[in-house]
Image 1 (cartoon, rainbow, N blue to C red):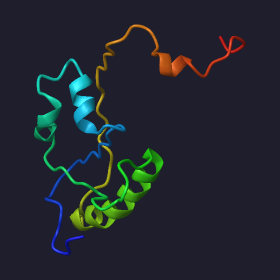
Image 2 (cartoon, rainbow, N blue to C red; image 1 turned 60 degrees about the vertical axis):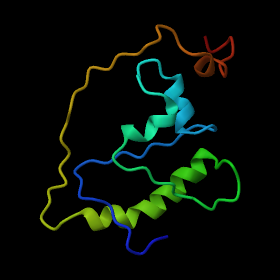
Image 3 (cartoon, rainbow, N blue to C red; image 1 turned 90 degrees about the vertical axis):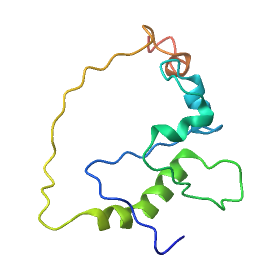
Length: 115
């Protein structure tokens, strides 16, 4: 809640949410990344704790998304300059997945009639 806080100028932004144990554990679990979770801040230009005084260890993802967007919206809006085109640039990416089969999480909710 620093009134002097602002975001640096940027063209694209991404907001990353960690799991229950945080982004650090997610980094540790990713076999393609060559850094330990303790150094995960190196992957980002800026690391912001949106709710530093939340009073509980975790926040549900749907709550974190709403809180984050509400708090970041004025900062992102301030970054826009007049006359900037808002046209979307289409980028085609070659996406590869590490698993050949669906995860347990993606199949756990299906019943035999859905298969």
